[in-house]
Length: 310
Image 1 (cartoon, rainbow, N blue to C red):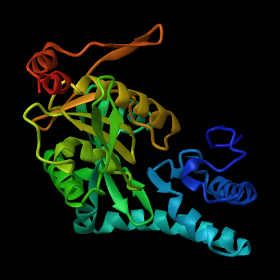
Image 2: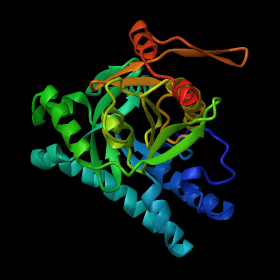
Image 3: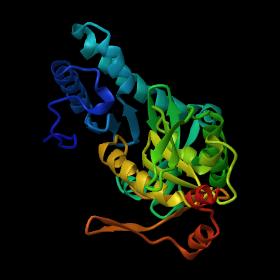
Image 4: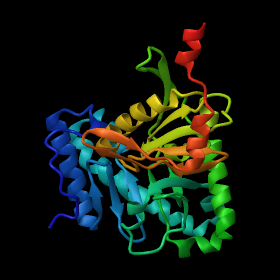
């Protein structure tokens, strides 16, 4: 029985789109074969293999790119060496607490991520169904140690503060601004932040700082997957159009992955994320935010009305 999640992958997934169909078939077969010998699990559509215990997640992006530029006859040895070295690097952290602390990062995940493990992770809930977990960011993979393994490194609250500070210190990529159409003829600015790091989504916790001076009203934020977040500073009533655009874009990105986190919408204000509930009824979006958010909406200007008055 295969230990990999069963998904039909006749063509390379988006994260490995530079492969031809034939190249992808060879690469994925070699990864499966090596992982099978080690009794590892994985999901090629999501781009990782994992040693189950102690848990070590090995992203396949780096080795895939290396193989793509190398002779195919070398791929089997390259894959085996790369993945085995990743596990060895993770094991070496056990003997070097200072290095282990230096590599700690805070990773944003959804509640279902926590359910994958038969052991307890160090985690903090930051919004409904959104959590931070402590992880090690190594050159070739991300390792998520068990809570018990981290006790030797210090107090858990202090470790989370350290991991967040170290994640924040790694500058997020410059966001791309998209001016999307508004029914009243104006445009709605939405910023896209995208990077290969497994910790990109964590930048949602300070997303306002990525797109300009913070608004006193906060910002709309979505985290469709580990590599992506969308941001709209709340300045005026165009926030309602931004809600529709962001939910549609997020729904598609969440479905595509890899590393899907949430198809929900969140309000970031004063460093706190609040889920803004919504549902779809008869192909119509029903938005049901809390009273506190509605109070903000009632005080916002309407740029289209201001433009008509002038």
